Length: 124
Image 1 (spheres, rainbow, N blue to C red):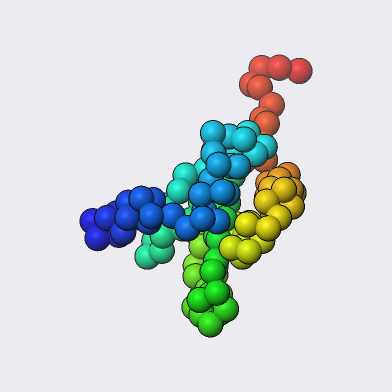
Image 2: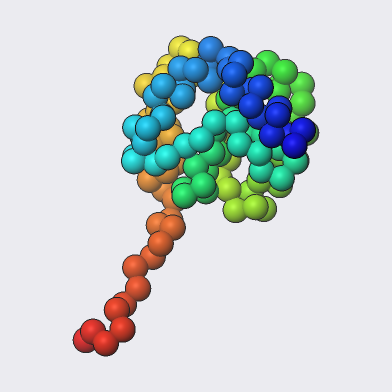
């Protein structure tokens, strides 16, 4: 329950970069993909998660430059869980939101289809 409370706190107090990115990706605005904010996965709380696309978007501030090894371990765990992790810097989101959205669209387009089509039984 502690992690759920922390996730709620993070949703109530987003950074300016998180607010701007959320406005741009919420309500399936990017590639028709649904994202949720501040989602617990294992021991981590991820900024933006699309379960259907198995993608995570992390918006990082300057503290993450110091915690590079910890961030790498986090990414390995999340990738092991089947997610693709996209890391963005706050200043990228604040200064080049259109470029950030284009990168997210590119990453989503490169993902394999989550539900490959199957042949129908009894057809041809």
